[in-house]
Length: 467
Image 1 (cartoon, rainbow, N blue to C red):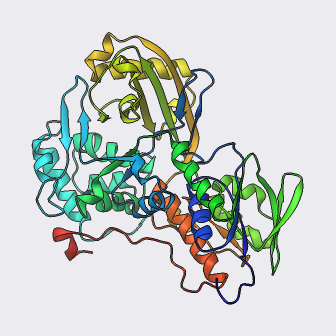
Image 2: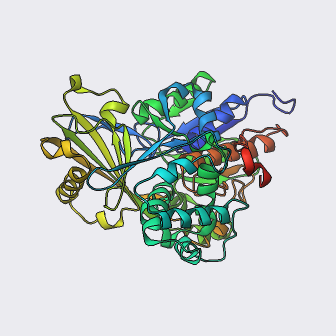
Image 3: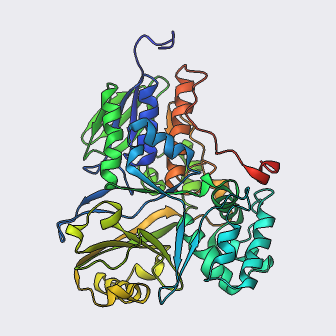
């Protein structure tokens, strides 16, 4: 304990998503007394699961995956003891309508050439597409381009990408990673995804999928905080706060509580609602007003028979973008007689106004184009989860609006995947934001050398020339 502390500082963390959990765990590990407030009855925020009343099944609100380049998320899993609940895959399967498959994975070649053999074999792309993709990758390898206001689709067109290369490579990867269409994505965000996951190393491109429901994964973080003299309060939300020189007063429910520090780990629109009505808040309010959101839709289907041997697949040329075979990934095999699959549509603006039945009908129809066994399978039950405001839209220019964790109130800090993390709106970005907020707070509280952020994976092979 720092000599300046007579007793551990008290910290309120508002929000039990990944950003709040990461901040709370980091601060608890530093010896602070953390109280985490979450308005829901479970942890994880958008990365959570619950028992669906219509199906009786425990479902994730949306499938979440990570890559080997997500160093801080992996650190968070290791910190909370759940790293063993992640299953890692070296290869991704790209499926065309009709079922023809192309596998993309690493080889023994040095980065950035490690996926070259797989690309050369990929039947979903023609030679001209592969040449175009290689040319664009070479342009991205040396450095991340700056934001000039151009969309990544504009950048792709300027760099001679074919229609098929855009539709069957760039879009499937980037729309899933950034939850936005490529004509609305800034060039630096897209370039960062490609450099970190495809170019820097083979390890960076590994894909990790949770083998347990998401709330099981993140409830461990709540236990971590409690084991270090902290507290987690469910069904409790902050109504407002007042920042003083020596403390922060937080209105929670119908009572006011006092803490030495506070971390607000909320979506940007929720934060705006509790900011003090003062001139000090106005610059932050103005920045938050410039953010837009983009939706994600998860479609859960249960069939009476096994429809595929694949654990997961990228689905090309249709509305559905990913299939995750949850009965295989989470060992829900129903005695080997059925399939539970979750289908994911990122940037799902076209589905927001559709009914559940319309979405299910569309999904089943498309699924049967990719998996012949699904044509004879009976759909037993289904549900659709729409996250209408899932992430912020990473459009050109928005990076300048993302706030740092420090605020005009010296004892108040911000976290969330929309803050200035250096990463887009991903689980990695959320954990980074929590670690950055905790780092700033701990230094203000007297731990001058406090460091929680984990470095990026180092570049390997020829990518070491670029860093």
